[in-house]
Image (cartoon, rainbow, N blue to C red; front, side, top):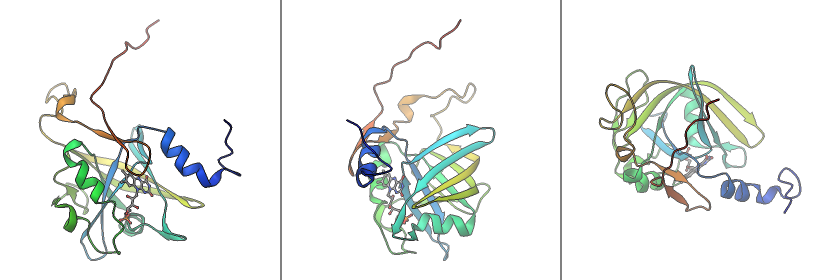
Length: 201
Ligand SMILES: Cc1cc2nc3c(=O)[nH]c(=O)nc-3n(C[C@H](O)[C@H](O)[C@H](O)COP(=O)(O)O)c2cc1C
């Protein structure tokens, strides 16, 4: 099958891309609303793209034609956000926070999550999330209907038991991360790992 995603098949591009480019990590982004309350939403067009400095990128569509989602509106103004990561324990709360609420109405009032002050930025992190990365805005690129948020990571808060205190190796059992799969309802657990030795010449 050949698809012309930028041309005649564009109307199915979202469906096909999100079905095939899987699994995707999920950034559960907390931002500050204008009144100081906290906005929370998940984004799976997300990854890290480098470590020196830590570079975080995620992509946000519009709420309605020409109207950016609340997360973008807040980041444009505050120039900062927190990437909270998602494991099986917070999966339902994360999913719940994707509801489209009127601007200023906090998802936290509905999903039972709580916030904790960040170390270096004003935007709080989500207490129930196992890992949070404080980010400052580097740039927002508008590419037609998409906005790509580029952020630089600073302080990272990792729940005790996930990383070895000395080696910083991960204990995967303590971080049952989930990923995004196809369809509006698709997720995956990541418990079936395998290893391959790095090729050495
Ligand atoms: C797991 C998951 C991943 C999502 N990923 C994205 C994404 O990458 N980009 C996007 O624009 N919306 C994504 N959404 C939808 C947003 O979370 C949703 O539109 C949310 O209401 C935006 O909230 P806001 O207006 O408070 O920013 C995703 C939803 C879920 C449940």
